[in-house]
Length: 195
Image 1 (tube, rainbow, N blue to C red):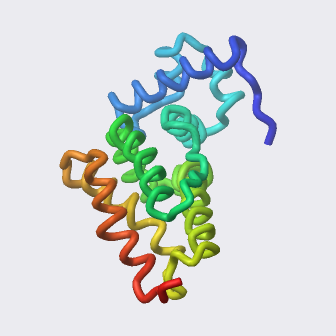
Image 2 (spheres, rainbow, N blue to C red; image 1 turned 60 degrees about the vertical axis):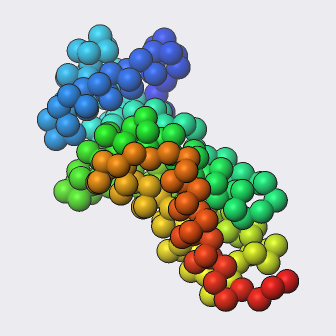
């Protein structure tokens, strides 16, 4: 699908996507309308629809635009350093957009279109980064042969999001370190034969 650029370029697009987050925080996903976003951004609704044909596309674009760029694949030379780098990137996203994420997660259960958009444009990029880190760790002999990386990649983000969003507890770099050192690494390396 080709993407229709906005008149005014990247700065205008960022302004419009910022308006989406403002309206989303005020009204929630269910009551967010393209008309409300267009009015907030002082844009025509057809301008919005040409670029983002559905509300799900628009909201996910705003969310993805607001988080840091998809995480690069860190290469510190060791699994622990790589996982800490990825978790710090995720921590930044949770601190800045945890409230938006919580609302979207609730909506994905009732809105398959939103669920697909979130999976394709947000979750998949994070999954690829973590699985690439695990793949390199396997090549270096750091992982147990029985490590279930398809499941293990979710452990850190799930713990971080639960603490921040569901329980409302403070999240910080100390928590990401504890998640890596006391949960992810022990599960990833359990039973590994010393190299």
